[in-house]
Amino acid sequence: MVSVIVNYKAKGVPATVLDGYSLSFRAVIDDEVWSLRIRSPQRNNILLKMADLCRQIITDAIAYELDEAKYITVLDTFEN
Image 1: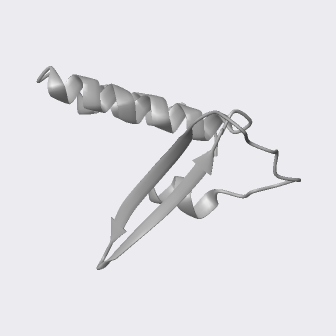
Image 2: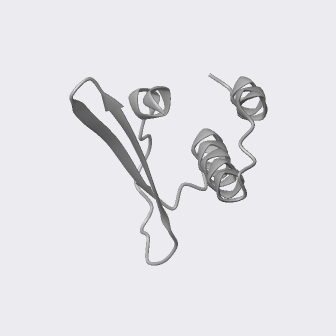
């Protein structure tokens, strides 16, 4: 999560967003909370992949089926 927040670069002219959704990423570093909020992130695949992974972890946790190795495998496929 820290890597996503630290490495995010907003490039180009922001699109006018009239609808859609937003993503919020947060991480606790020492005694600080770092956060990043993105509206309509369709142009940034790493953000969408991270959001999908987070949703999968939540779904698995609700079903008591957490699998850390699976999540690490997904993280390994992310582009730097």
